[in-house]
Amino acid sequence: MTDLRIAAAGDIHLGEDVRGQYRRRLEGIEERADVFMLAGDLTRHGTLEEGRLVADELRGLPIPVVAVLGNHDYHSDLQYEIAGELRDAGVIVLNDDGVVIQCGDRKLGVVGGKGFGGGFAGKCASEFGEREIKDFVSHTRSIAESWKVALKEIVADERIVLSHYSPIKETLEGEPHEIYPFLGSYLLAEAVDTAGADLILHGHAHKGSEKGMTPGGIRVRNVALPVLGRAYAVYCMNGNGLL
Image 1 (cartoon, rainbow, N blue to C red):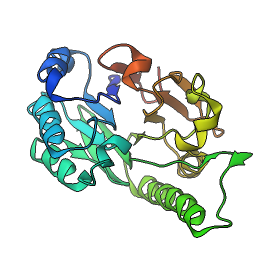
Image 2: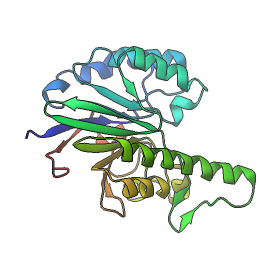
Image 3: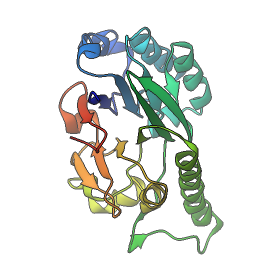
């Protein structure tokens, strides 16, 4: 059985001033990876023009592309239109659901979406008090539940979760502690640990660190571009987990 090679990046934040530049950095990606995953914040301000630019940069890549949106992509309330542009360009856009991709002799299941915040065990918001706080936490809980259901339903040789927000605090190390609740939530990791997966990819934490692990032992990688320092990272899986 051949290794499954996953290229991943997040927080590419493309704008008109860099048109064509990221695409050039993707040249030859098919020689290094079997699938390309984008962990949100594809645009700077979530405008439709930026969404179309991102779609143009990704159109016609010779390997499957799977993406989720990030908070920047939601900023102008055009997230559905941006997702539509990406899908028209052949990108698979997840919104708290899943997809199975045939990669050679392997079936790769990918589940995920934007994710959301709330903080981490012992230092997190709870569904108590003002309606606004209850809504904040319940939004994350609803997303986590959707991921858990999708993971349990998907049938594949390997399963990856793709998110923008982080499921653990370890990959946030380097960011100010005060903003951890706005960078992710333990509820996301709890859901994935319950349903099971082989790898979680996320972005959002530009000053964070690359590697971590959920309490249940699932490897987590922060693939935000400022963390990677390159156009994308490649992770290999051999049927027994991440190499």
